[in-house]
Length: 342
Ligand SMILES: NC(=O)c1ccc[n+]([C@@H]2O[C@H](COP(=O)([O-])OP(=O)(O)OC[C@H]3O[C@@H](n4cnc5c(N)ncnc54)[C@H](O)[C@@H]3O)[C@@H](O)[C@H]2O)c1
Image (cartoon, rainbow, N blue to C red):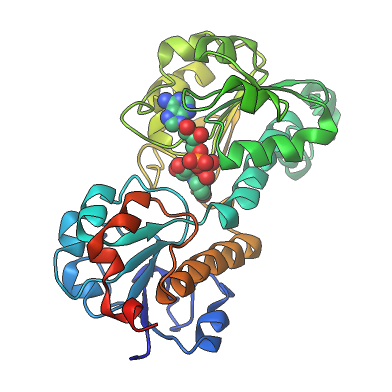
């Protein structure tokens, strides 16, 4: 059998030619006798020409369209370094017999930690207190009392992998845990200490609202002006999922009017966020450039998960964390010559 060839999308390449994320566990590929190289630069989309001839492609930012998988020499597997799939045409991949995997096991701890960081930064008033020291205003510190987390109500939109990990990290604070998710069962949530409620109840009753749902047609601008108006004046909103789930203009207005106390945002409707955006001028928000979860822990976690998927497909097995499980039944997937010979 010819040695497997794995392509890494160009956004994973540092200017010096190394892997931009550092240690993603690439030695596991090398140890398995698999060759890897960076794809040529893309314009935000993986074209058929870029991925042609590779057995698998490990990719982070570029989009996957119907055209990506249109050629006969397409990869067997597109392994996403991360979990968001809003820029991947899953249906086209399934139709072409191309498996798509994600790395929820690598991302969940890092993203949940990012959410917790934003919560604590807001509740402890970290940015305001940092400014007091820099400005020599120690006498004003009584005006910036923090809020303890213990016993607070945390409501998460989207009771998925990240939400569960966040509730796990919050356990020592004895928070009251609420979630809204139409695709989860009440009993399943209750067994893990989470009460499933409708979205209005979540917005009304939470001290901390965390957005952790996937971006779909159903969640785009789901948190709109009306729902924001239901939040408690002392409540804060955290978004570590996708910016477009929240109406950003309505959020900026609610924050500017003091209708809610603060927001912690790792993601935005438009990225990069323009520096003249109304959110940037506000002091009651903590902002991060969609990178708060980017740690060595996430690099190795995501990389190792994607590499496990590559090794599984090379061995003719159905990989874990398959985003398009229907592909496993596709004759186009099962009959790849490389797999038949293993
Ligand atoms: N900030 C980052 O760096 C970063 C990193 C990884 C993931 N993310 C984002 O976080 C999201 C969640 O990740 P995850 O691993 O927990 O995914 P997941 O698939 O495990 O969870 C997403 C949850 O959203 C729920 N959902 C779908 N539609 C909903 C709706 N209308 N209302 C309420 N809930 C709804 C789903 O049922 C699911 O339980 C990803 O889709 C991705 O966009 C961000």
